[in-house]
Length: 445
Length: 176
Ligand SMILES: Cc1cc2nc3c(=O)[nH]c(=O)nc-3n(C[C@H](O)[C@H](O)[C@H](O)COP(=O)(O)O)c2cc1C
Ligand code: SF4
Ligand code: FES
Image 1 (spheres, chains in turn brown, red):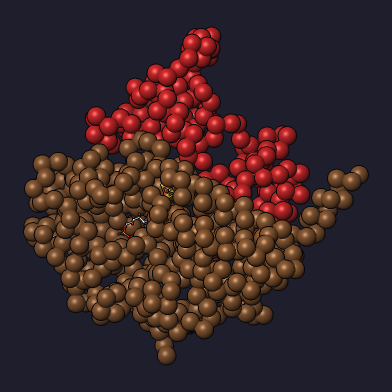
Image 2: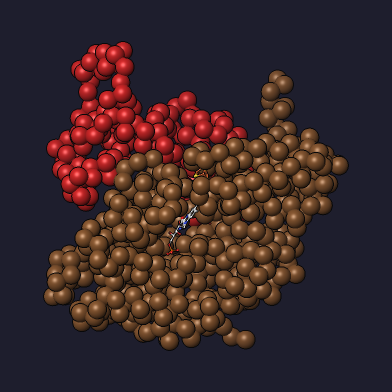
């Protein structure tokens, strides 16, 4: 089967000079959707209806209908409205938004203009994770180009619609990817989540109606608005229409971001796109949607990559960070790695997550060091179960879900650790052994 | 302002070396403030902290005070923000901050081996700075470069091309 790997977002992603507005306009029919809708004074509601009909779902992780989210913004509110772009991309395993912003910033900006127009926002903030500071000059210049061309600023294309677009740099905190923590951060506070409801669409930034969308979600908006809902639905499934970027990492021959029609079998992503595992490696597990999702087994490689099928298989499409794990990786070790991440990033606001992740790390460390007991494996599972669904924000779930799945799928490895007081396999530890020995030798002199 | 008397006294003693923004920086601060609604000055805390860190290398108490003063925000609010986010340096750091991702994909691909090599080469451990003030070595979390693991970020720049020990050696030896 020959795969068409040039779909929408990535159709011309490697076009030289694409960060410039002229190349973007030529390669992607850039800003035509803005000319058509804003310039053509299409009713904002019609834009919302079109995006709703396309079935586009949020690409930040939750997969919620984008058009639906926009329609929750109260029509009669006298308050200003805001669009906020979630460019905080920090879910381990995910690196798609970075490539979109690096190579094709105008597509995101065009998406910002269209969605702001649809919800009648006159200010948009792009919240970028601090580690992406190197992207700021290029994004600033893209915004300036869009403004000079009359797509941003006052009275855009003679429509009477005004929009300013600002960049706001984060400073290192995974929790700021959670939309309400992001809003607090943008308001100049510590990044801790807010209680929902009220949802941001009703009470978001500065207590005003706000839509928060992921970078990839917004990048999909211009082609949808230009070409229509049916056109977008030529890809994907009934419930998961369109295309999605998957970030492929782990020991595969060709790691990277791939745009695939939703519903593509996981096996095709691995073999036809990523070139399969590197020679000499054997597949043990697949983490299909970023570090927070449950793992899948090699026997599930025929799972279609759409929201429903991946859920039926026991995991989630999430952010599309697809990590292939080979059989020389210890799953207890991996659970500890992921748990350390969430324990460190827990904002500490609620007890189940703050205390729970702490205890998870303690127990996993003991099991990993060969000091654990069989009961502790169940205790660990029980702690995860106490966090799941009972924490203030979804970070708690993100910490609990992967570990629960590793225990369920690879319980033998956890038990082996307890019984034999060592890993069944562990490339990482084997590689570190010489350094440990050198350090031990040095400390004896 | 939730400051105790000793602290205010200390600040008075320090008045002689109170930090200041240059006129250009002051213009930048005004531009930053203009991005947010007039009654939402707190939104300028993060960008002005970034500016202060860029100017003064790390966020000393004086730099945090300057930030608060320049946007007319209470000091404790600015200090609370500065301490929440890991990229604000409250202590001096080396000229080059080496940030090696050791999360999920990078760990699978051998990042910790590369990190151990760097510890050995530089003679420092995670979180430490070399005595000459040149390098600070940090283990960090996913930098959205998982496909090019192992990788590292040096100050703002990403070096994400499947680094091995030899590549890291070349990279570090090339930094003056
Ligand atoms: C702990 C946590 C971290 C998150 N991190 C991100 C992120 O880095 N980027 C993102 O777009 N969404 C992230 N989300 C999801 C956002 O809360 C929100 O659902 C998303 O920005 C909505 O945009 P979308 O509908 O376009 O997907 C995170 C959620 C949680 C609970
Ligand atoms: S679940 Fe974790 S990150 Fe979310 S509010 Fe509670 S402590 Fe904070
Ligand atoms: S896991 Fe290291 S960059 Fe993402």
